Length: 201
Ligand SMILES: [Zn+2]
Ligand SMILES: [Zn+2]
Image (cartoon, helix red, strand yellow):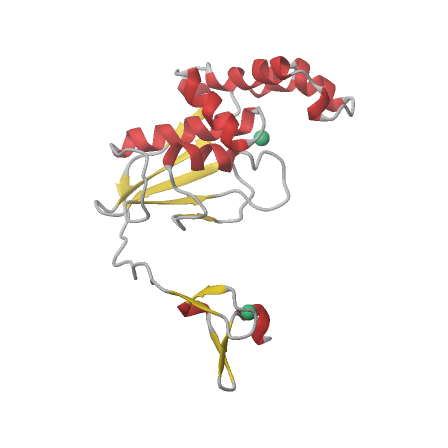
């Protein structure tokens, strides 16, 4: 597979690791199964990631974001919070979806890599040569797909109507910073951002 895609994904992610490589492969496989391309807008695809908080290998999520174009900023990605390395990609227009999950078919080789051996000895990742990190990441990248991914069937997935993007940024009467109009709160005669308003949400 094209290593340039992987290198660009690592640049976006911030470091070289097996989990983000797995995320890129999973995201690309989901696009292929649905017959769609990486999205540049919020209207086409929606992704549900099964990762949670504060656990290893959440790097998977950045690989998925890079591959699919579903990103935090566009609001077309969300976390289910189950602590699993899997995603469901939804084609909103055609109302179909596919689930792809990481299969640990090469996990022993990853665990035995020079990089992981050093991590096990308590060496911080920044002190391990990039070459060794790359050797670990390509274990996932170069593996046959059926050893690192489980790809479910493409299935119907109802979507319905999006509310659409709510336009308009208005300055908070208290701090003067711009706020999306739907997030302004009324305090007496003023319109304030949530932190200034004292409301929780
Ligand atoms: Zn990572
Ligand atoms: Zn404010």
